[in-house]
Length: 427
Ligand SMILES: [Zn+2]
Image (cartoon, rainbow, N blue to C red; front, side):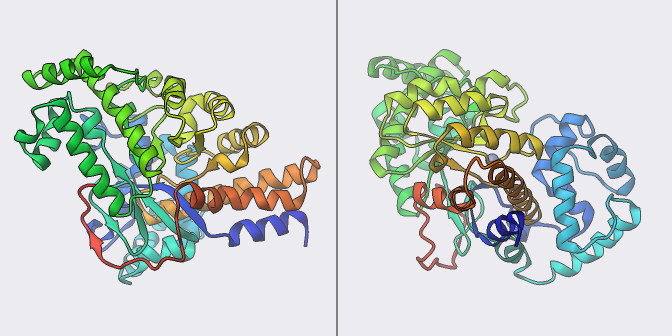
């Protein structure tokens, strides 16, 4: 067996622990399933439709849908060379055994027929993720859908960090009632109660998406400033940016303490986010530098390789022992390889993880196949150039695909998982 064949066999046989996904409940997919429905449902494709201007948006999540092949194919013309589309299409071709390299009207119809037949099988969705993609555990970032037979929940407390914004405050009020939310202490009590509940429900991590609403520079707000900011926030129906930031900073520090107390990692969205008023600089991971130093017992996991700030992520992870890096959501081929190639030289490989950031079984499969291929290419080059041995290459791949995630997120695959479905409101 050649070195490539050996690496390839090892990497493609290894089960993956997916650190991050937003898988859609298959029960909410259209019946019968079709090619148009698949492309309309893909969150990653929707980002491409929005950035190419094919579909306008008032809100990131409220894109229109394509109604037929003609509308779809006109929009496809400008995104057909992008990496996510190529990765997604390659995955679909492999799962549904399509022969054509590009989508045309007849291939689109062939795909629709195959999708509709496949989805008649009740477990098809889980089978694609488990058996075809070889994903043995998935950390699911969703409030709506956490099927515990194959998903591990991740908790979100963004509504507490964004409490100063009336629309997010309403979510906390809806759950706990106004009476409990008349003081900063009351707010922290509700947070602690939700946190405890989420950990008891099996949350493997806490995810924070602050980048969507604000710069991720969390200062060390004093308690007295936070008390005033709380009073200013609830006394006005208008959004007060100064009070919202001060209170959010204080709450975020408390979340870091709770993560350390319960020993669960804090996963942070870094890099660009999808909000319409979003500034790319808000997600610069360097803004997290002080927070990570302030909370040395909290494990911080920087998501998405920092977007355009991959070098910043790398140097933070080199500098700060409790800083870990996750390549989830890097929808690229050569770009993904370049980042990983650089990180392997500079960051202890025991601090690196990967996840799909998928919302459909098909993109979970496609992204897993792409990551495995990128990893094989990279490791083969490194072994051939005698940078490290084949044995080390296999050890690194095992750590990246599952070992680090199992250790850091404490994913115990031996434990039998219950098969009850939960509409998990807290996690
Ligand atoms: Zn995500």
